[in-house]
Image (cartoon, rainbow, N blue to C red; front, side, top):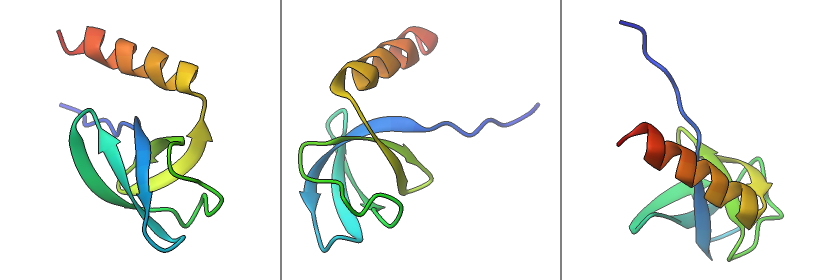
Length: 74
């Protein structure tokens, strides 16, 4: 059985110090690194992989991805 890594969208709810932040992942809060996206501001949607914010994304793209993931896990 192969394993797959998955990046998921989350919303930045608190920028702690420019290098770390707290994101909301569908009701679960998680601290992540913002090292790759230091310009992220609270309210931004971010694609997250293994605890690192990789890219700021639009709300539309975030909801499309969330819907796809929800369909996949039904």
